[in-house]
Length: 205
Image 1 (cartoon, rainbow, N blue to C red):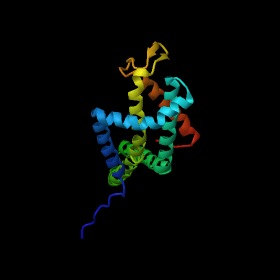
Image 2: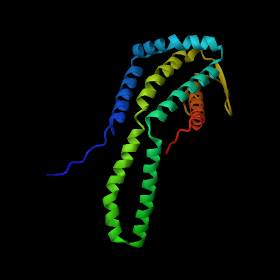
Image 3: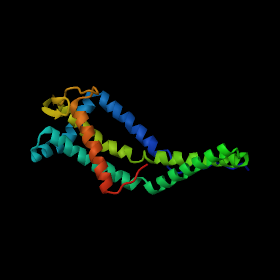
Image 4: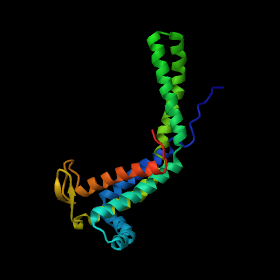
């Protein structure tokens, strides 16, 4: 009886969910009625928050970037096995080192054994890469309404001062052709996410 390969449980489930959500996001973004409806729903919470905080739009975007950074980091912390991921990465690095040494020494017997082992190593690495897609769907479900609300509010955001570019309207294009508010959100999100991940001791590749 032929042996059958078993696919690791859930190895592609996270990726499939992420792709489905990405398709839905593209549909929502391309339909103004849906885009505005979701922005209005998000506004039921975010408009009062903006009024309570009483801050300008650059600071409000900073606050939202901190919020999204917190929940995305927490989701990743509790849905991704970073210790296992690092073990797989270490095994792959050790394998690659051993493989190069066998190539340089011309050890054909060892090369055959390593070639047999390579498929298993690649499957493990693929499974761990797919593991990273598990939280992305949930992260986007929360992040997209915030982003659509910001998109809706952009015309009333006012100005921001960027290094080397001076004062810009938050809807003005920047050197990377994106509106200033998107660039500011990205900078805040990337910076704060690193601080939050360090604080929560969240590993990575």
